[in-house]
Image 1 (tube, rainbow, N blue to C red):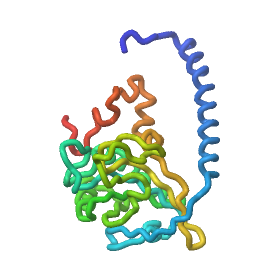
Image 2 (cartoon, rainbow, N blue to C red; image 1 turned 30 degrees about the vertical axis):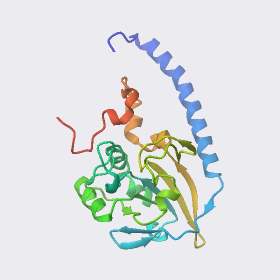
Image 3 (cartoon, helix red, strand yellow; image 1 turned 120 degrees about the vertical axis):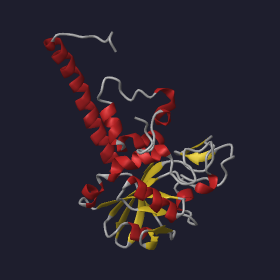
Length: 240
């Protein structure tokens, strides 16, 4: 960092304005991409999914909580397959998923006032979810899809962790785990529910506000090849 270029204010301002032009171009491109995302075709959800949560057994329709739009964060947590090789344990979800859930916990009230319900879904039994949610002090709905095809149908759970390849992020690829992270979006209209969008892997970056702040500072994310797994911890597990 000490060898970075240091200049007088006028030269700093000239460079900043030049970069601002690129930032504005990126903003316009992002706005266009968002419009095109909203224009993607929908698919009808015609399967009856059930979940276990704070209110007992709930249908997918119930998870909307009276609103018209639903965003589901697929959090990796399956106690049955937990082990030394998994980022989740028998009692806690994936530590990187926990980082993501920390990021949206505080904004759900704002989303609610834009006709959006934000919820998390995992395959762990609901008592496990409730215990960890209490530990973290989270307020968003977190439901168990145990016994449902919901996770498998949305390509975030796999029946065979030893499979050579799984269908994840719109392609067949090696994975080596029974769970994967993702976001799925749904709309309720006229008594019907539609699946409008799903994204995975780096597609989740834009939904993590902490990363946006890291991208502003001189050291950036400073993660190396290991990504978030090299430094992220559950919020109450950092040392110092």
